Image (tube, rainbow over all chains, first blue to last red):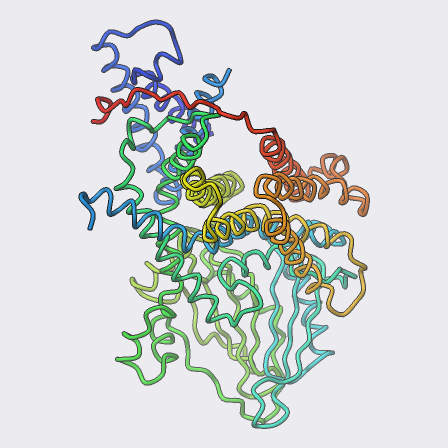
Length: 88
Length: 518
């Protein structure tokens, strides 16, 4: 259960980070983001990742290993998702 | 020599990576598969059911050992439980004469409840585990030095790669398909950066787990016999001398239950009896070290003639425990199914990192000379042979397990030979065929081999995919499904490699986004 929550947090975090980067924002949505909004999106993205990190530490070393593994999987999902979207 | 640190690091990255790359591919590829060594072993012994009962298994093993060799050098029993469904029984007699070091040996595999099983001879998933640091057909110590040297190169390549990578954050999510060399670089970056914590951890802890081989000098300087150091570091009792005076051995199976309170909740996994039938007999009950990050085995040692507890608990102090955590992190024995899959995913990332790195070396140099130089041709052939040949060989290893006749003295060895013959076939392809064709054919070979695995399993056993699904048999579902997926991946890659090259695919140059660098 915690695993699903952590994965969702990491996925949201990385998606928001991608959204706050101009080149990827253009691939996700046609809307432009005002610089302030973009910064906000980036901060929320980092906050999601930080929250996931904190939650994973609840389970000590084992939790941290799992959290890092899930973060890798989530980032991979975002990278592949963007790449496939671009290829279409 | 180099105008900037980045260029000198790029040089280091390129050549450290190339020199060690092929060995590293072997280590990453077989090591990644070995995260599922228990499940692969189950799949490779289809005669065995999933039931396991360690105490009953030990009772049967003890009866068998008493019958086979009531007195001798040692008994060793690997108990079923957890991811293991087999009971392995080994015994060795005392050397027949003082100039020999080992006596006659024997072994038997029982099922998880200790019933005698007519099980095919195979090294199972444990072969892949051993192969990833002991290689094969080489003296073990030499192999470990080779793997260690390459792992050190890996560490150098990772650090220099991080320094070389110009836009590690700006390009974090960047993966562009169909842009030739640029795409390989993107893929290499993605495989490396996304699983970077894993790559650093696995390389460092891999080196650490063999550190006494690589750096023995501290021990040499301080101790006359390395054994003294090991027994101090891990609280091991001094080895016992064989007395040559017969004495009955206490019943061993009940000792397992008496050991339980000292095992911190871990399951008893190994029973080792030294000098059964002698007054010097000792019995050691130990765990797999899979209860937590630390891989330290909990153990209890009993006097073999009286049954008194001689020693109990977790061995070692803080330094030994630190090493045990590193080994635990590396091997992931503690990992439940979910975490095991994450380890596997990151391991695939490492394998892809090495493979794309090797490919980049050729991609960057392809256009520069019309007739490829010998060095270029050599690297390309080794790339094709390794990247397509080893995976195809692993699939052939699984296929041989199902297709070789069940009897035969060297059956387990023949399965392994199938891996290397397939690999040699890929090398032959790489040497005699033009590179493009060789890539397509090598990848096609791997695709065919992997896609055949679930099919051949269904044809040769009663535990095909549908039956396993109905029975909820995780190991069989996992191996069948994973091999099918990997096969599909290779088929896709083969199809892409076989497509006629779009003659001049103009790589649209992106405006160099120097501003994106932060």
